[in-house]
Image (cartoon, rainbow, N blue to C red; front, side):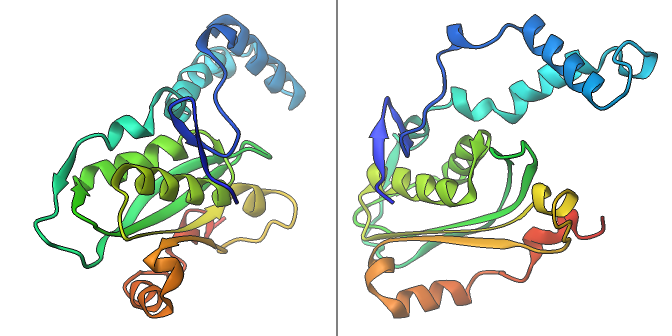
Length: 218
C-alpha cells in the first residue's frame, strides 16, 4: 500500500470532513432517534429519552482523532546519544471503530523503531496510536498509518508496527465467532529487509490472543 502525506495527516487517501461540513449536534441527535426507532423501540420512552445526547457526546470522544494532527505529536525529537538498537513500546491499549459496521475494534498495538540519530518521547507513541485509532478505520490501514507517521517524523533505520485486535462486527453479528484476534504488521526499512530483526521483534511481543479478550466471553 502506498503511504503518502495529505493535508498535514498521514492517510491513505482518506481525510476528515471540514468541521463546517459536519452535521450539527441537533442533527446527530435526530439521526440517533431514527436509529433507535429502527430497532423497534420508542426513542421517546424514559430510558431512551436522553440517549441521543449521550451518543452525540460519545461520538465526539470516540472519533476525537480527526481533530489531532499526528505529525504535531512527533514534532519534538531528542538526540539518540548513539543508541541504534530496537526501541520497542509494547501492548499499547487501542480502541477503534470499524468503518464497515461501526462496531468496536479493541486490542493492542506494538511499535518499534531503530533510531538513526533521533528518538521521540515514548508517551508520544501511545498518543500516535490513539490519534489514528479514534477514527473510522480498517485495522490494515491503521497499522500502515502509524508506521508511516513515525518514519516521516524520525527517518529511522527501520519501523515496525504490529496490531492484534478483536472485532465486534465478527463477534456480535454475521458468523458470531468469539475469542478470535486479527494480527496486522507493517515493516519499513531494516525491519522489512532483515528477517532476523523481524524474528527478534516478534519474539518480544505478547501475541497470545490478548486482543480477543474483550469479546471472548460473549
